Image (cartoon, rainbow, N blue to C red):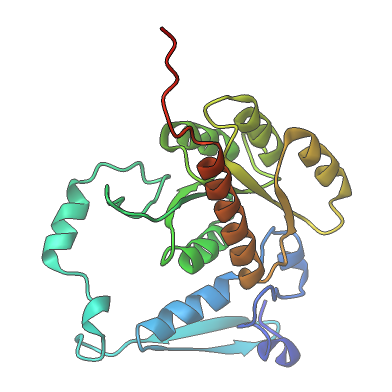
Length: 240
């Protein structure tokens, strides 16, 4: 459909979506293009576009050849590639390789929107081990298997919504301790009410600042660690 001149200045900003009839019929979060631009920038490339309203848009991506422009720590070595290939992972559960001795907390992101899921993952994976699932049913299964420290979940998802997944997590003795952050749409009062009944810890509108989400995560994980330390028995009880 093409992009108007006024909107062309805004499309690489977060939560910006084109205001035409086709876009209004398609769900989206407005993070796809900013994610693409950040990835291109990370690779020392360039992204631009040519658009004529009423005709269409062409995006151009340019990347420098070779790898001299990349820092050594940003180049994946052959040994790491081989090790990763041997790891049997369900492609729906994309995750960083877990180091047995790692002190990182584990976060599960349950979100059916790939752009938003990737955006959150990219902003958290330096500090946390991140697991991903594309709907509540897969998220619940992965949470039971991996027992993450915290779950970030959308409310509206296919197969199983975030409210039901949260209810099942909080109703299970093995997963009831897991902190849950629910992502809700604007004016989601009804979802907040339902979420409170299921035991969700935080309700965050989808137009959130990533720094706010990071602060909530840090606070919840630190609180859980303090509670665990406080109530952990110092000595074994002699029952004989």
